[in-house]
Image (cartoon, rainbow, N blue to C red; front, side):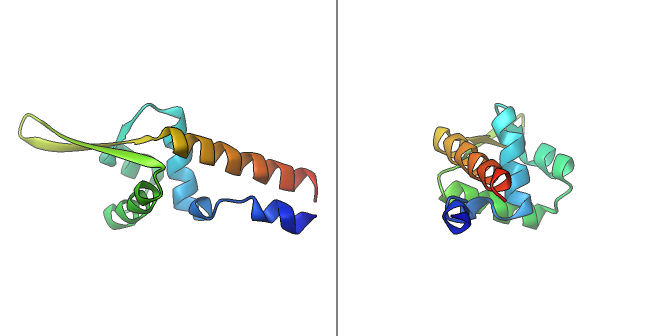
Length: 99
């Protein structure tokens, strides 16, 4: 029974950093790279790596634009990402209730 509950966990969210990124993006329409970096206290490389993995999974959308002459990259949770994250949290809650 407990093994079946573990099977419901989404491997994309096993990392503390990815769990944090999705938690922040699900409750915000979008955030810039710098805002995410500051809020989560992650290095540029670490944040970029985790965002890329979430983007490749289809859970995060990236928008690049210029504000004046400065590049600005923002990130948002996709509909699929929001659903996958909700499912993951529900599985985690169910697991905790059945321990």
